Length: 171
Image 1: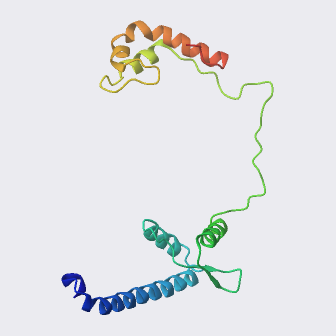
Image 2: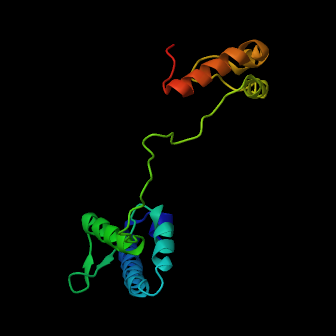
Image 3: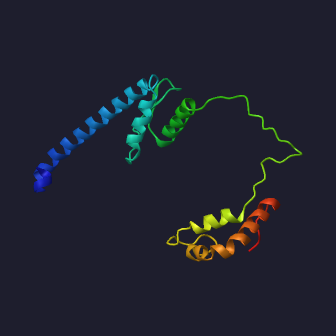
């Protein structure tokens, strides 16, 4: 009644009803989250799906169960973040003591030589989309496509030299 009429005589009853509803919602949410954390031992996906649903809201998680201190509840943001980090690091971390050994042949190449040919560069230049914007070299694709027959061989030579020397050419 207070919202529609804005009369002061209804304000106190409105505030009492509003506060009672908020308290009931908060208590229900608190008990739901408490039960959720008890159930997540058996099904960890429950917590992940609940976290995704709550992530877009500004209030986030109301409570998190702190398991290390006799099941007390974490109420501030730092405790919540620490507990979530600890929980997910246990859930998704696998201990692998063996590190893979990479066989590096000191005398040989690590990869087979790559040869860039004129025909490959020409085909790629002819398939450029002229309506797109220019790249980091500030050369428009429409110009590169129009001049593809002329610039294909110099570009192939430049790319091939760059790969053989393991360095990029200067501007």
